[in-house]
Amino acid sequence: MPAFKDALPNTPASILPLVLQAMSRTPDSRLRELMAALTRHLHAFVIETQVTEPEFERAVKFIIDMGKATNEKTNEVILASDLLGLSTLIAVLNNPADPSNTHALAEAASHAALLGPFWRANAPFCEAGENIVRSPTPGMPLEVCGVVYDKNKQPVPDATVDVWHASPVGLYENQDEHQVDMNLRGRFKTDAQGAYFFKTVRPSGYPVPTDGPCGELLRAQLRHPNRPAHLHFMVSTPGHKVMVTQVFDDGDNNLTSDPVFGVLAPLVSHFEEIEVDGHTQARLTHDFYLIEGEMSFPHPPIP
Ligand code: BEZ
Ligand code: FE
Image (cartoon, rainbow, N blue to C red; front, side, top):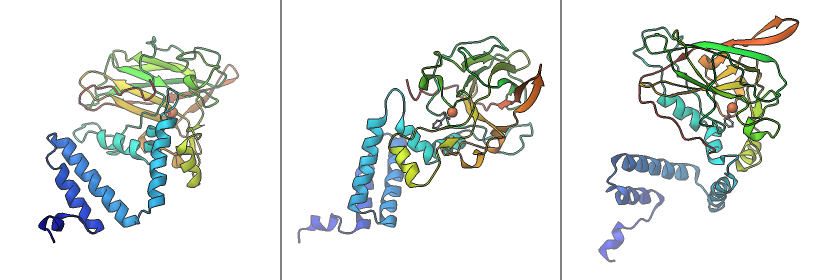
């Protein structure tokens, strides 16, 4: 037998070392590390679960279907990573509560959440106290305020608080022909005391999109698609990481079964209901804690 034949793979486990060897000269060290680890885990997964040929074909079809279903209205690839908990994992891993913080956060938990597909860059700048309801949007009025703090619990003046959320019927403005452009979106500057304040309507929960391959997967897993009611925030100021987060309504029934696992304990807040002139309004107070780092903004998932 020619000598080279000894170097060829002949068992499932003998393929991996050859692949790692082939990739080992990758000049970019981070790409080399990432691809080696990914390949190791993929091979281990296939061997552990004994993936069959029809199952592999089905997985390839799922990936192709995600690409086909992704368009200017929806991003099925991000949705898949959301439903696997990967988006939340990336957010939590990369935004730990700063261990050098001198103020007492209730726990060392992250205060970050996944971006979700509906953030749009360039929401209008608003004056403090402005209402971000821009076209008739029936619902309970909601006032939101809080303070942006740095790692030393010093208030951060002139930080940008970008907010966006779904309407009381559970639709974002760019999913709903009854809302005008940029309805329920706005950017606010914190004042000299680090405070922000705006008015809006109380959002409701809503289902993640279920008309593509990810919806099919949810149904196959007997999982419901309903996110608990929340507001999205992106808080930024130079010298700090852009804090992408969400604040959840503590009265929602789906807090412990969010299909995208975005609900962290520090992000659940009380929406206090008050009577004003015989009408019920809600009030929410939520503070943000920034961590030091580079101010780098994400790309909008749906341009
Ligand atoms: C959202 O919160 O906007 C969202 C997150 C994941 C999937 C769908 C929507
Ligand atoms: Fe959302």
